[in-house]
Every structure is written in C-alpha cells, then in structure tokens.
Length: 74
Image (cartoon, rainbow, N blue to C red; front, side, top):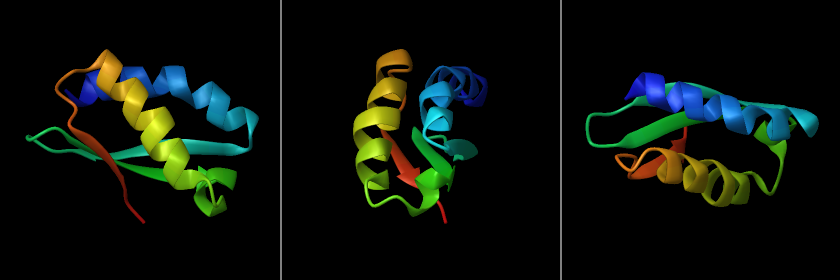
C-alpha cells in the first residue's frame, strides 16, 4: 500500500509546492493509518490541519479506500 500512497501524493504535491510547501510520507501502518510530514510553508501554516484533513486525507481516501486516516508526524 505504501507504493499506492506515494503515487497518490505525487498528484497532491504540485498544489502544495505552488504555495511553498510539500508533504513527505513517513509511514503507512497495516491498519490504514498514513503518517506524513508537512514541510516548507505548510509546516508552519495555521491552516495545515485543514490542508491535512480536507486536502491530503480526502484525496488519499478517494484514491485508496484502505486508507483510514492521515496524521501528521513532527
């Protein structure tokens, strides 16, 4: 599943990079939890939780039904 998540993140990256940020995949657990790290401008942004849940998590869940949740690692 890690490969599927990496491919899905490639589709999300351009919009994050356009705002000066990015996302790194940290881990994918066996129970469908995706751990990511927001970097650049996204790491400090007060809207990062909304980006994480409404952008990244929603997109990953649509592409990969096995994804249960996306959480941010520091």
